[in-house]
Amino acid sequence: MSAADTLLYVESLFVSFDGFLALRNLNLIVDRTERVRLLIGPNGAGKTTLFDVLTGHVTPVSGRVLFRDTVSLLGRSPHAIANLGVIRKFQTPSVFPGHSVFENMILSVGRKQFGETMAAGRRALHADEIAAALDHVGLLGQSHELAGRLSHGQKQWLELAMLLVQAPPLLLLDEPVAGMTKPEKEKTAELLRTIVERSSSSIMLIEHDMDFVRTIAARGHRVTVLHEGTVLAEGPLERVQADQRVVKAYLGRGQVKAEA
Image (cartoon, rainbow, N blue to C red; front, side):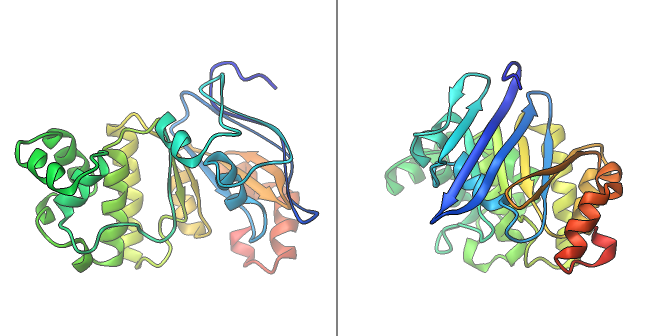
């Protein structure tokens, strides 16, 4: 494997928890030109553990993880990795419910003191970037509404906007449509499309909702299937679905046949 011209390069990654190999000899490459990579697989496949390694929450036994060809992510704190531009959105939205949508956005750009950030916001600091990010996720009209009053889906979209305004080179999304209604899932799929079109961020996302996966993958994005801590298959969704190893792994875990 070569790390040249890659956004993310993972080689021979092993992670052990009390002797259990959560990741075993995992290899993965995301090219610099790749905008979306879908990560799927049964529970326990190692998807979240991989995200934990990429963001500095878990230290592997061995392996290499390079960001932008040469920058090693291993041994760095989560804060240091975020400063490099690898930012993660967890399944549960992390917003400040007692503050407005606009105030949440101001806080997301990295200011330390709340009073200072509010004053800075009124002076229109980052106003264009904030407006663009809120427009991307359809919340521009709710700028002055308390974040705590938003629906679950809207809170997810607000957090997306809070991350996008930081313009991360790599945005990691962990089950972005979990708990959403069908219309919210459809809107989220459309939001990801506009994010890809309008921003410079590349997205890597974990998802179990196969209808959502199909919607995103239909635009030509690659799918990586993890199973028992390693890459089982990779490529366009049609090829992955036809792979008998994938079919067997999903059926063996009791998954619905259509999801295989």
